[in-house]
Structure formats: structure tokens, C-alpha cells
Length: 101
Image (cartoon, rainbow, N blue to C red; front, side):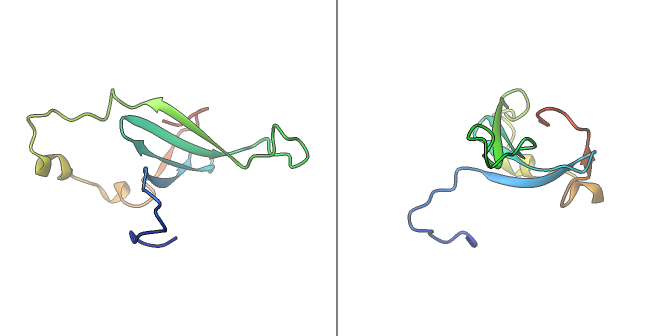
């Protein structure tokens, strides 16, 4: 899969970013509208067990408390947020949580 070209009718639902927890576990996070999305590797993976044979699990959480911006704020101002050097790329490490939102 590459770029933003038409991939046989596929629609982009969300953009995800790879993150690393404080314990070094990698996961993906992003937003799907007003919902926070986190995709984590299944730590209990067991190919022989049908219940545990999946490789990843997707979690959702209400993102409405942090996502909406005031309607009276112009879009250009919403996009222009100061970013530190740590805010680029992987965004540093975060503490581990059952669902790291």
C-alpha cells in the first residue's frame, strides 16, 4: 500500500501513528472521527487456541473530551500549534496502561 492513490476502491478511515510505551511496547494510535483508536499486539497470542490466535486487538474510547476545538476558532489557528523537538516523529515515550489513550 502506498501513498494516497486510489487502492481499488479502498476508503481511508483513519490515520494511525506508531507509538512506544515507557516499557518499550509498540502500538498504533489515532482517531476515527470523535473516537480514539488504539491497536495493540496480542500479548497472549497462541496459534493453537482459536480464542487467542489473533495477532492484534483494536480498542476504542470516547475522544469527545479532548478532540473538539471551539467552533469560533479559525481552522488555520487550530493547525498552527507549537511543537517541540520531542513532539516530532515518535513523540517520545509514555507510561504503560491497559489501554494507552
